Image (cartoon, rainbow, N blue to C red):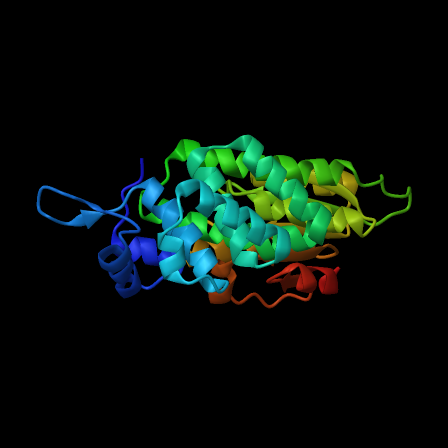
Length: 288
């Protein structure tokens, strides 16, 4: 069960702490508990309610009217809102609620609906990625368990894998791309999505996954001779170590285009004609 400070509630709901306090006093929308030292904190149910209240309020429903709603009426209003409008935050917050409750059916129905409505790529880029950023806030504040985080990220991984499997095989003479994460890199959702994008463009792909020893990468590239290698660096390591790793990669494979993403790369400068940094799907496509 989560325990949220009012500042954490503000980050996750988008409602200012001052406004939440007003809603508490005037409308009794939530009733925080208090620690032994008299510090207020909020539960998972409080978070879900504030998220739903903020969605309705941001879409023109007066707070006084929301305060008079029963829980069932509040839920029904959210359903009606999702049927008539397309606010991105609505879907992101519904995914957060599904994660907190570990409701696989709720998550599956929502994501399937979004894919049908917006298409796979738009759903991932505009809804799932921002949702994962919010998960980062929950993780940093200790308000989701490893089980909840693994539960939801594995469901997302499954969706991307199904989308990849639905794509046709590449032509015999197609360009080849190897996708991998270096050792100690375990967050592969972004790389999986890049795999989908590259395969959809017609490349023959070799997806080697996470935590790959360099020697294994070297052997695959020696045998299959890809035109492109794609990787992502998320885990913060020493800048010098990461820089040396990438320099070795571009030196060992001078005829292969090396494409890398990750915030860590903004601090690293590598001068090599076959090395390119990409920040999103558009720049990935532009460099292929």
